Image (cartoon, rainbow, N blue to C red):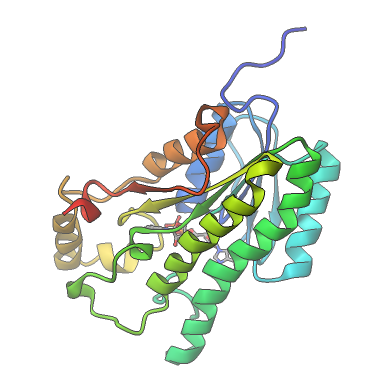
Length: 254
Ligand SMILES: NC(=O)c1ccc[n+]([C@@H]2O[C@H](COP(=O)([O-])OP(=O)(O)OC[C@H]3O[C@@H](n4cnc5c(N)ncnc54)[C@H](O)[C@@H]3O)[C@@H](O)[C@H]2O)c1
């Protein structure tokens, strides 16, 4: 019997935030490259119609015990874990639906975007190590490198600080794991058309403003971010760790 081909053949990959947007594009892309893909989301992930062996878990990444249990289940059910994409995330606009309390929103954004990334990574590392090594890909943002654009004034948003934290967490963990066969990198997308940005892009004026911030004159697509995640997940990036890959149509190059 010949082994299956594909850039991720033989790899077990877990993607958080997999029900929507960038996470969903990652499970589609990784499945097409023959990975065994497991979708995790606080909302039940949509897995129908996708290629490859696939299962899903409903889990809040801010709950340490829950995400640990999911990771251990995946590892024992699929015989290991090699790739983790931390795509679960919220903006200050959609973090909490029941309040406009700026302090509670701050805490939730940091909790999901930064602590959720830390918890998922921390519980995954022993399983990835047992599996012979692998890669962690964190979703940071251009907002982890530069501040909010002037047209979206919100100096008290926790989103840029949370993503700046993800950039630094990525570097710190990458150094710690560099001699243990686990590479850790992050992606810094500009504005991407997903449910996260829908409240902005649904307004014509704001949408045009956002497009104008990107020299390419448009927002990114989830599949363009998933392609970069695939590269960082595959052995093609075998000497890359601790890096922040900007995918922003020139946004931060100006
Ligand atoms: N869309 C953009 O413009 C953009 C730009 C840069 C970075 N990012 C980052 O990329 C990641 C994915 O964003 P997206 O645009 O695909 O957003 P999205 O809203 O389309 O998808 C995010 C997913 O995360 C899930 N989620 C939220 N909280 C969770 C939790 N506590 N536990 C588990 N799952 C949870 C949601 O249910 C949703 O399915 C986020 O970290 C986001 O900050 C997005």
